[in-house]
Structures are given as C-alpha cells and as structure tokens.
Length: 141
Image 1: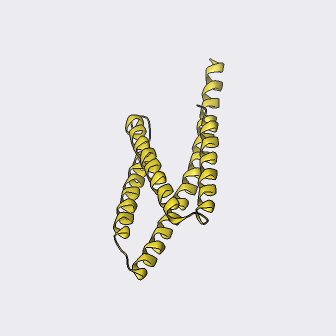
Image 2: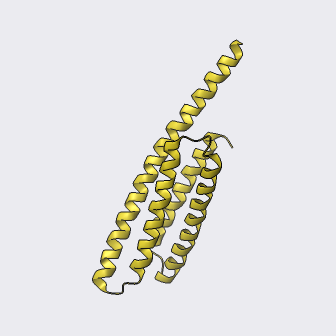
Image 3: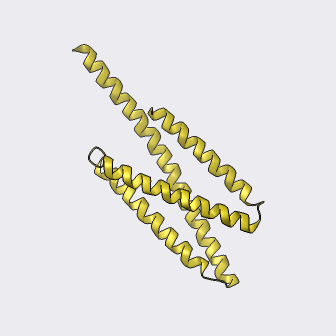
C-alpha cells in the first residue's frame, strides 16, 4: 500500500471517529455504552497490531519511533486502567470528576493523534523524497 494511501486511510478513520463522536450525544446511554465497548475493543486491537508491527519492524525503524510507540501503548494502558477504576465510582461528584478526567484524556489523545498526523505527513513526504533521490542516483549509474 502506498504511503499516500495510508494517509487517506488515516483521514477516513479520523472522519469516522468525528462522526461517531458527534452522534454519541444523541444516543441512548445503553447504546452509547455498547459503542464505547466496541470502540475500546477496536482500539485495543489496533494497539495490539501496532505493537506487533512495531516489534516486527523494530530493526528497520528508528529507536526514537519505537520508543514513541511503546510510550503510547503504556499511556493507552494507563488510561484504560483509569477508566476501569472510574467506572467503579457511583457518587455524583466522583462521576463528574471521572467525566472531567475522561475528557482530559480524550483531549490528550486527540492532541497526540494530531501530532502523529503531522509526523506521518512529514515522514511520508521525506520517504517519498528519499525514494526520488535513490531513483535519481540509480539512473545516473
């Protein structure tokens, strides 16, 4: 798959997430709970696949990028653990605090994703330029 196709896939997935987020405000609580569980399973699957790809590609990838991926996986695990413990609270004040913390975590995840998109754009363009340079050098031989 071409790198530009991967960016298209990323943009499409981001739009789907945006649409689901907007629709969530109008859904019944139990329906939303079901969607949250589905999104959690999907995110967990993606994180597992990322970890697997990262382990497989670690030899080719820079140590820095591998560390970013590992740090992100740790962050995701921490957020999930926090959300599980938040669910145990029933008190209204605790529920509001949980909502505030979940919102902060969501904002942090979006900030990270935006940064990742910027980094992805840069690395795709840099990889494309590197390939062009390699092709030009090969043509001179």
